[in-house]
Length: 427
Image (cartoon, rainbow, N blue to C red; front, side, top):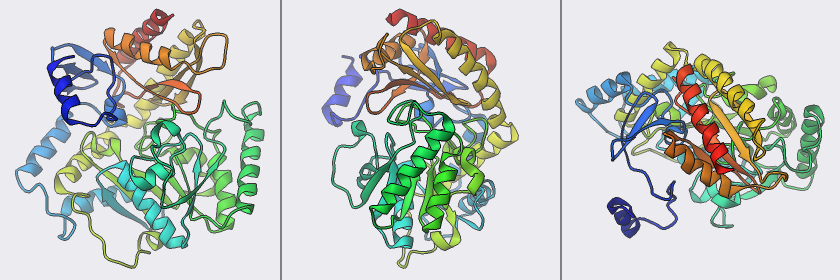
């Protein structure tokens, strides 16, 4: 055990997860690469858990943060804040939500907390619908709606949560159906569930389940859900903490793959907007955002330093069409990994869109999860100079690949070759 790891264990919680048998200290980064304390260089295909959206040490963000830090770092929401207003205007403009209002937080967890507060206050109901295999954060209320046992340390909750089918296409009781029949079965399940419960406040769903292993339903499923929900006045919250800002390539927001019945009532976001700065937030129609009947503030949500980072990062993302790059380079990377996986019996599925790709592993000849193989591939990829993530839910194990959206074709090919070799080495 190295000296920093020993100090970490002495003062931080046992449940604070670390990757790798010999945990890694990252000291700096540039573009799509990071370096560890020994000076070794890695290609970064996880981006601080999908947070380094554009690039490490992006000059435009660095400059904006430095200039803002030289003026004022923080004042709270009790004072007018020009960077916060400017970023809120940009976010509202790209949100797709009519008459949008934006509230900034410091994380995706806090954003989802706020969305739940808004929905339950607006609807006067503490019942929430959530998806099986979902993850929405680590706070008390977010844990209470998380449908992934590995990340849910308590059954206590301020909410009554009912779990719906549909977040995982290739597992569960409807997996054998085609897309249309799968969607119809999930809608029928939702309608049946609503017949047995008091009217819920909202359905919260990740368009692509992040921690759950980058799983998703057929396009249009949440549009079909929305039709059922809208008839009953139930809100739709789209958790875009991992899918937002063009990561999926085909769309700027994950919900747009399900946009036939209109946009969500509430969208939550975080991670990539700040490119490492602590930004989260909620977008909602004015009537929903303004429904609270007591005062509220945010001490650190919307602070000038993070707003400057977010505004510079979003501007760079849009001006350089990184969504288009995610679609093009991500498509090449997925096909490259699928071609490799076709020769590897331990790979059950390569799935995803854009630069949000999951490689699900299973014991060869079975449909059973293989978490030991996932851990081994993670280690082997590191040895080859590639950092990736992992995840999964009930009886699944998946590798998670989510590089910065400025990834080049050459870097995609390099990363795919390292990952293919890591997959082969485990067998």
